[in-house]
Amino acid sequence: MCGIIGYNGKRNVKKILIEGLKALEYRGYDSAGIAISDGKNKEIIKSVGRVKALEDKVNNESKMDGLFGIAHTRWATNGGVTLSNAHPHTNGKVTLVHNGIIENSDSLKENLKKKGVKFYGDTDSEVVAALINYYYKGDALKAICDAVKDLEGSYALVIMFDGDTKLYAIRKDSPLIIGYGDNEFFAASDISALGNKVKSIVYLDTNVVAVLSQKDIKYYKDLKEVKEKIVDIKNYNFDTSKGEYKHYMLKEIMEEAQLVRCFLSKYLYSDFSEFDLTPYKYIDIVACGSAMHAGLAGKYIIEKYASIKVSVNMASEYRYEDKIYLDKEHTLIILISQSGETADTIAALREAKESGIKTLGIVNREGSTIARESDMVIMTDAGIETAVATTKAYIMQVLVLSLMGIKTSIKIGKLEKNVLDEYKKLPSLIENVYSKKEEIKDLANKVYKIDNCFFIGRLIDYAISMEASLKLKEVSYIHSECYASGELKHGTISLIENGTVVFAIITDKNIKDKTLSNLKEVESRGARGILITTDEFDIPYDLKLTLPYAEYFIEPMVVVPALQLLSYYVADLRGCDIDKPKNLAKSVTVE
Ligand code: G6P
Image 1: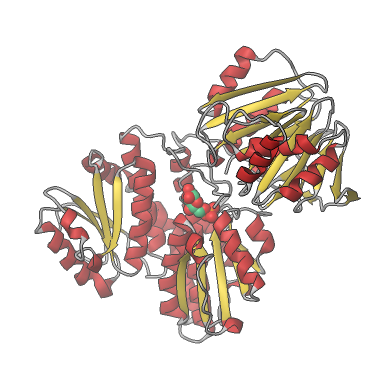
Image 2: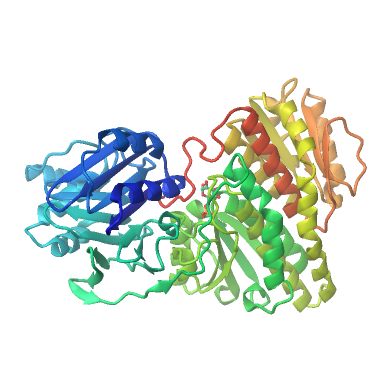
């Protein structure tokens, strides 16, 4: 993970770098640092903690205004959270920031130590600085190219050399873009760091070195100058303000209805071929976290309506499994990812492509690795999601999968075309959920002091429960487990005590009574049940939240916003750092 930014231009370098880091903080936030230079002198300031702590330190301690600089916000992978492990890292004439993991850093470090190189910390990034410095004999470009030949793993690097006024950027398997402003140049992990300062960008190709000077940018591959494709981003929406909301998470939940409305106006009746699953007999969905949970909801919809076998896989497991494809030619691998940069999902994508299987990315970030490398792409159009816990991107992922299932069902003649009209109700159904926020807050008030809880549900209600449980635990730190209702009694029921909260999700009428029986089983062992259901049923129950009924293929997108709100209010009552929960990062670009 980690966020990096570099700047070479005429404006206030420190200000631009700190602003960039604030926008990148979602990528990691345990320590941060900045290095600025005027070509002769250099200043490095680092701090443990959030970017705000760095900003304060820079305001108090900085003694120079540089011409260019680099900055980093860290999510520790290699070496603890300490000042010496914070970036930028320096060795000899080299100072750099790094995102990624160098897998052979231990052996590289040993070799360098034998040659007399000294180290001050525990990170792989410091080893990269030392390695480049080792190769540096006055030609920065050559030193970088020689050093990266020795590296195994992933890297996005922005590098400065003492006595040189240029910045050097290079990447492999970690994202890095180059931004063109008004006579000023940027390198950054992500477009959000550049705000509206740039007009066009380059998605840097693997091992191409970008050399950013005060007047231009040049690109080199194997020491020869090359051209990179410049992409116009005039229409990119950079609005990342919190608006009237206390937290991004709440703002992003409240955007869901409108995002769904816009997406449907574009795709509901269109013949966009990417939604057509008729060429396939088998679908493997591969994703991580909430994106995987969206895939699980999609599985039930696609299997029910399009009659195609779907398996849902955690990318971190899938990439290492022995794959058995029954019919490669008719198999589709769907990679779902908000960021499009999740390392395990990218690895699964590349493996699928190598074995000749068709790939489809469902992605939120344009130009991301998964968007660029998949054979086909559907963009989820959720806009920038800033809160680390995903909300609106999840809803859009489910919407895409749901439309795929239903459009395919129409094509095979299982459903009539007019079933699509049902989707038109979705935005107002979500708005109806928003109107229940006081009721949801009341429920939050009743449960926010608990230490642990369970979510249960069957089939699509299980998929909903998985996401609800993850959302609650990640933002409120309440220990929450999700079980398929029938499975709880095979061991875990031993954890049910007097007062243990069990949320039961019931929206599917075919399995309603089964889950109700499971709820009774835990109640008779002392559990305090909370029923989350729809107004299709009239289930008498003490503690319940009743949400609007919708068709099976729409209901998850109505129920999940309510449960996202519940997690939000519980976390708020517990005083949690909702937008940046501890230990998490939004974009997991390492294994
Ligand atoms: C992290 C985030 C989750 C997200 C998962 C997959 O764990 O905290 O919210 O669901 O990564 O990320 P992706 O960008 O691939 O959807």
